[in-house]
Image 1 (cartoon, rainbow, N blue to C red):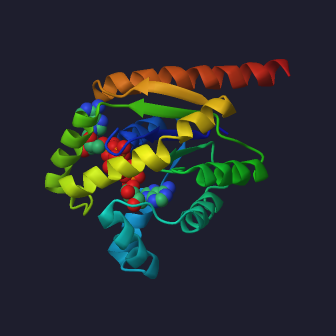
Image 2 (cartoon, helix red, strand yellow):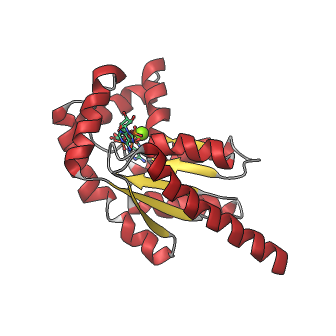
Image 3 (cartoon, rainbow, N blue to C red):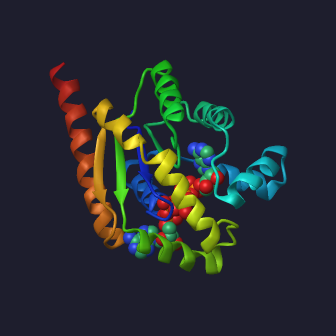
Length: 200
Ligand code: AP5
Ligand code: MG
């Protein structure tokens, strides 16, 4: 399986690039943010809890989000691979993901870290906020999301460096250029795994 963690600050292009990766490599996509926003729309109990955290730009508790991820993964049993978007966001989430994938005989193939300047992140999210209806696309919540990202999520780069799967991507150009860089990396992983299968 080609399991890809797409990583980066809020507004770095995780969702945008996930769509392109899915289409090109025929992978599934799990976005924990999307799952939570659906729960909010449907007015479920989980949605009510999620709403409180998301509107403040805070992370939901690890146990809750790991449980959600497990259920999503169970729904993708015959997948060629999954793009994980917005998960993991903490070290315990990364360890839980590894355990869940290992139990299914697989692992994370690569972590793609999208690097984008902070003023560009803010500009993109404010622009999207004009239409998105996302309750976290306003300046106050963006500041808190960025702070949470730096304090709790960015340290995952070190975790994946140790795992040997870290790969930085310049995330500041056009959507097509960025996807070109991602495609090059993923193509090389696909070729490597075919070589391994062919030569044992
Ligand atoms: P989540 O939904 O994951 O949001 P996020 O990480 O804040 O990121 P965004 O979705 O805002 O941005 P993105 O990186 O996907 O960029 P996009 O492609 O949209 O999480 C939301 C909340 O849910 C969290 O704050 C937390 O409360 C909770 N949550 C979720 N997962 C959790 C977890 N694992 N643990 C705990 N809590 C969790 O692009 C942004 C905009 O820019 C778009 O309008 C796009 O069109 C535009 N754009 C993209 N690329 C470019 C480009 N190259 N040039 C110009 N514009 C571009
Ligand atoms: Mg997103």
